[in-house]
Length: 322
Image (cartoon, rainbow, N blue to C red; front, side, top):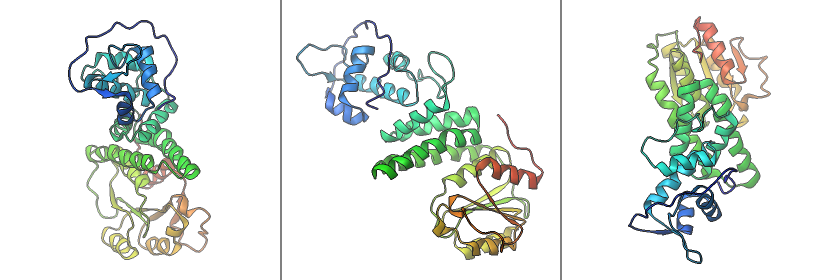
């Protein structure tokens, strides 16, 4: 966040009365917020966010109110709001005064690129609440598919690339994944999909040994949003358990996710294909898989919209639109 100081006007800011209480150093506040001390100085100078009074040659001291304002400032800038607009809200420090995620306090709708940068920045600050708020706001406004395709996937890809290039940032990657999962679950719970009748629904599962469930969670939320019935088995489903679930429920479509080639085994597709109307092998692990020797009911699909279209077509259903 050290490079997010922004441009802009900055005129003179009227001083506030300084509240009494515990005071913190700039270094302590910077560590608490995950920003550079130079950013705090710049925000104080340009936008009047921070200590109300400062004497030249003396260290700045931050009250709890100052820190609360700076937390608001960080959250908004992290969501893509212009620093001057974020500061205007932060200085008010009125509960509920923060603009809705996806809208700029100065008017207009922020681009996905801005929101993605905000999510990545919040993840780097380990601010899970900010990521949850950003994703939840986009889900409410634009729906699951658009949020996943244009916000969540790019943000996760950015963090994945940083991990691969630097060997660090794994904590930010984990925070982002957890927060996105947390934001998706209420969609599934609130959308009230119909009860799953035998042979009428969708069964979602990760292959044995596969722990990456986030893409399936997004699919589950998208199905719920369109009121399509689905069961979610979750991570690392043993072959025998998957076969038993298929036998008991007779699903129309089984979706199997594999993140890596080591968890993408053709034998499980063969087994499931014998008892399901359609089997979709989804995820990068299946890339390059030879399907010629598998049942005709097995197919590979590249992305979330394609999976939804396939399922809706089989069930004769309409997908939710925004």
